[in-house]
Image (cartoon, rainbow, N blue to C red):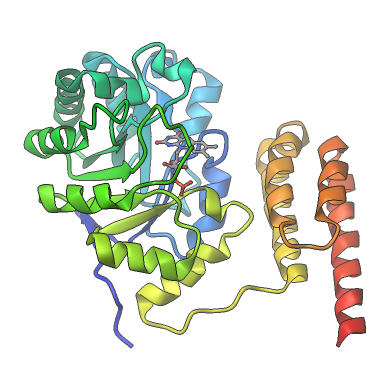
Length: 335
Ligand SMILES: Cc1cc2nc3c(=O)[nH]c(=O)nc-3n(C[C@H](O)[C@H](O)[C@H](O)COP(=O)(O)O)c2cc1C
């Protein structure tokens, strides 16, 4: 069967399938990106990195832009409100291997917006334009931009900012179809994504609330976007990516693995995190992932509470192994 959608093209990058893993701060480090890539991602994006912090190149900041090598092409995302600082940061991340530089005009977190970064930039579209121009001029790779609809419902600037992006040479735009004021409340409004797609010629990546493979394909078709970006729904469920990739490849969609196999993969994820980041950093980060892999498993609430209190990787993996044995034993009884 032929593919059901075309590849996404950003500069010289042919991105197939047109599925992008959303940048998620504290989540999409190089380990996560490399683990998730083979499920069927065309592109992965780093966590956002402060352009100011990149002036000092401390260890934690450099870890955030580090790549695994398995997950290429990688887009490195920057935030900041000063065009010159953003341009300098773009040069640094390009030298460190970024295939694409992405500008963040979407983050609604107060610690970012209080310094006029992230979505706060959308309150000053001239500044957005100056930042985009400076970054495009600074690097020899494609520059993309990710934004929300605007700061608030009464100030929806996304079409204006996207047109300016296109005019200064930005090569793709991602829209998370909520306002900054909304944070994560309500739902992403894909009508706006469709409107953006018809307003500009550069590729548009649609983002927000894609949780089901068929709904994701339908949203992509109805809005006409060139690619979709998946965030929260992939956590604990990377098989969502594989199912969507199947539909894009024109194959029959695979079914979800059994609960036991999902938990086996959770252990693979856990071990990869411990190997790369050490137990003290991996264990707290893995709590939220384990909680999500446990979704739908009988007794998940009690297990989650147990996992939250455990500080040892071996002990946490032991609890997951016990759960696999229990789930398999009850499946045998039921058969
Ligand atoms: C924990 C978390 C961290 C995030 N960090 C970033 C970030 O660093 N940069 C960014 O552009 N968006 C960030 N986002 C927003 C996501 O990229 C995405 O736009 C949003 O979650 C909506 O997509 P979804 O409904 O598929 O999750 C973050 C979201 C979450 C849940």
